[in-house]
Length: 155
Image (cartoon, rainbow, N blue to C red; front, side, top):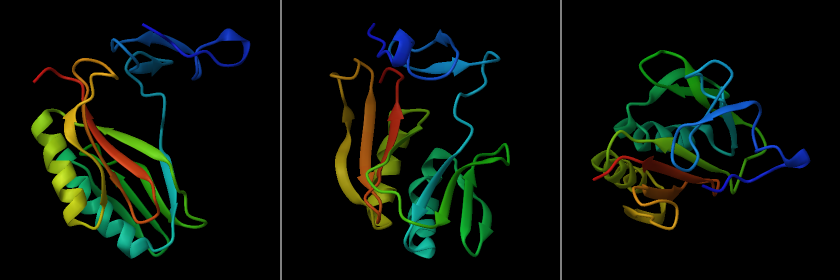
């Protein structure tokens, strides 16, 4: 396994306690607590972005939990939003990958993303150059962000 190193020869990320996936699932602090708490993307048109993400991420079990005039929060059944869209200078060329439970869910994400106005950036399929079970699909949103659904489980 190759781990990219940052300044001072330490692995990228904060206090890395465990690399549980053969390549890069990283857990920090307390065991099982995700390293990233939330992500905010700046968008040009909140209504258009909300529509895209609400539909593209639905197959992954994600839904809009907060809907305000200049802010949308998306999360799962826990009720805690972790993916935010905000009216501000648009983020672009950001790559966000969402975990899918299985390959069929990756397929459903990709189809929903394209139906909702996304632009294809990689059809569902294996990406063996990442690792042998990496199954992902990619779509650009209206602001040029690369949104992915990925499953690391065997077929």
